[in-house]
Image (cartoon, rainbow, N blue to C red; front, side):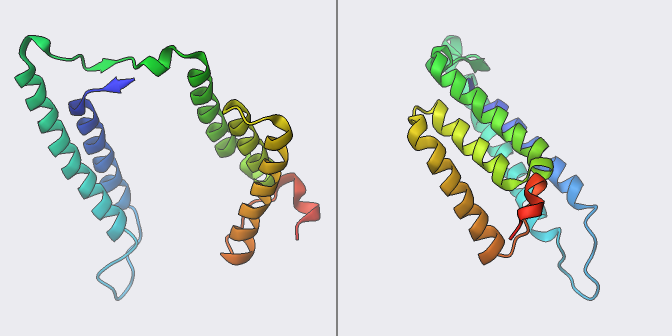
Length: 162
């Protein structure tokens, strides 16, 4: 789907406003002028600024188009291709699966399903996709858990956690 630049500008500005409102709840750092809300606040202000510029440019382009004015939203050619639509649906579904199941199932199982599903829908043969998804999941887990010391959830694999 193709959205007009004015629509994207409004969405970016709205996202920036939501971000600015949210960072107000971040705690202040005692004895410091800057705190954890500084960089997200700058990002929110940047989103508002860029959204406004994009929105104004989109509205000007619409006004200059005259009778040939494009619609606010239109379907792209890829949305008529079943494989592309399936790929998009799997991408959305795997992200939702990750958000909802990673704490219960654990990173290793969820990451494996995530990567395997994406590779399979993109046409990677199963005999390659499944071992590759397992190796990549273990490599990502190792990098975050051991090297970066980011505790990833073990979920049902907690009894064999290393």
